[in-house]
Image: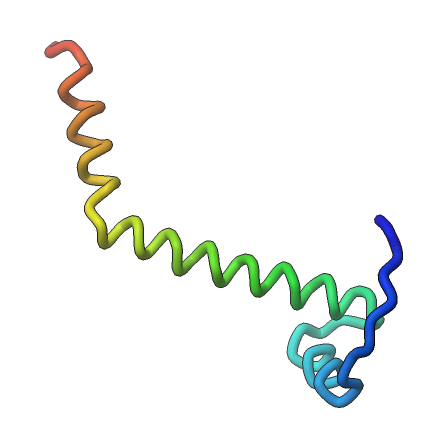
Length: 68
């Protein structure tokens, strides 16, 4: 993993460390990034679910399967 030099709000980093229960700055930043991406994925999944995409895929899959 490459090293990246950034300026970080130390107070915000400490709050994130407490919330995420991490022990180092590196672990805190990585956990925070993972959490942001996870939350984005949840929102995207919900958006797809509300769009009806999964129902259409299920219907298409059922139509392609031979009757038993």
